[in-house]
Image 1 (spheres, rainbow, N blue to C red):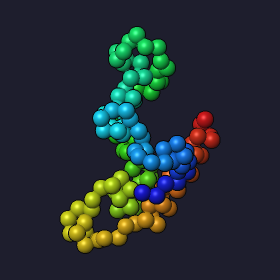
Image 2 (image 1 turned 90 degrees about the vertical axis):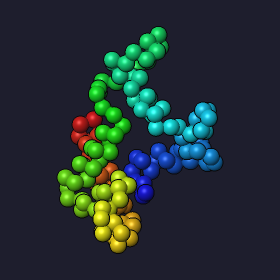
Image 3 (image 1 turned 180 degrees about the vertical axis):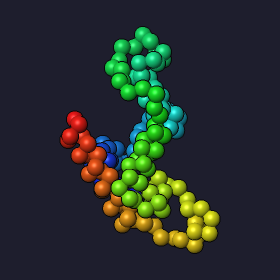
Image 4 (image 1 turned 30 degrees about the vertical axis):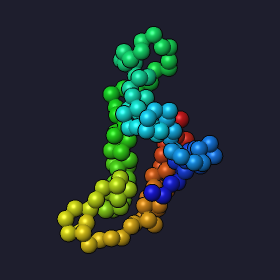
Length: 131
């Protein structure tokens, strides 16, 4: 998957720290951060979370969302300016259905990079204008 913008910056910083082994290291059995721990990390700071109530921590203002909502939002944000369906689906890692999935072996590398760059620029503009 091509990386652009802030995503690329984050990954490069992580590579400076974790050049070997898992990218998102964990001291658990697997050695890497598992999806459920990421979801828990999003749930715990919610204002209605009762997990470890004795711990003082910052609480999120945004509620009732899941990590999967980021995929949905990204896909919608790609579709809005006209990203072709097949490119948007490949970006999400979805397989093309039916005969098209069997015969179309194009990787869409250039197209993915182009549309992810456009999405990155759009998100940066939102940050600039809405802080």
